[in-house]
Image (tube, rainbow, N blue to C red; front, side, top):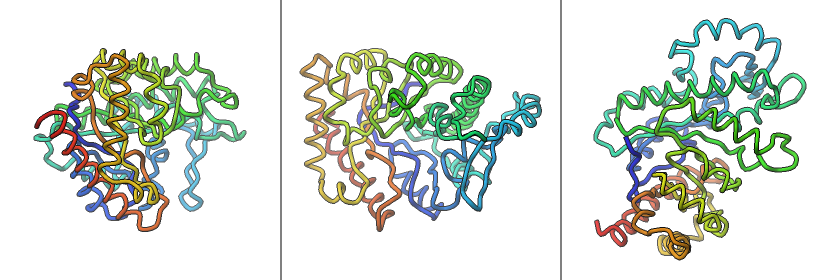
Length: 341
């Protein structure tokens, strides 16, 4: 089923709350709700830790809050994991690793235009998880192919569960690491990354997309076989329109853009209002229209969301909740203006 656009709202999964029910309540204020990740609740809620569940070789220290990898442990555990490779349980997220996911699965959301899940992507996971030699596992030619298949199965199992709740369910693959992919220090080049990401996306079911808050090579990303791209437009509003040809190709393939325009960091949030954010979003749309992108198509294939996750500011829960409320108000205003709803 297609992912809905028409300026509907969704948001990033990582939230600052420690109250599970409140986090779900706020997530449900979005047109397209999702299950929240709550790293301030406990370390199991960290997005990398959740993705690492059942991955062979993982060394998780809850007391020190560290997540590492051991090749010896990988070799020791790999056989058992492969023996259960067709079992959905090994790829799903257990109640221990998420206080919210299974509660979310109990909800009746069949009448929503869509629902969404998420999992940390293989590039970011591979860069973030360090082995016994202090080397990211993405550089290991033995571990990396297994990691791609393992993470693809995790995405598919979650998506299958969500589709039972709502036929329009889709997945974000969270890939903050993509913004570092093309730096000289990454040691993992664009050709290899392109091949690995194409292999990864070939293994996962549709609808599928990427969310990231950074500034990657947008041309590279827009040319991936994605159904939705979620981005921090608030930070990248001067950069993203430069890639109009790639954006047009993405839209012509049916892709959806989720415009992250409302900041949830305290200082930028306090400096903005509905009018200023509407001006910024419309300025980007006008630039794209001037470069040949059909405005009706653009609006029909757009969502509106917060710009980023936020876990660092004082009174953060109130700031994030105010940000979500502003997303809703901005969406309503823009839909009334542009879609005549």
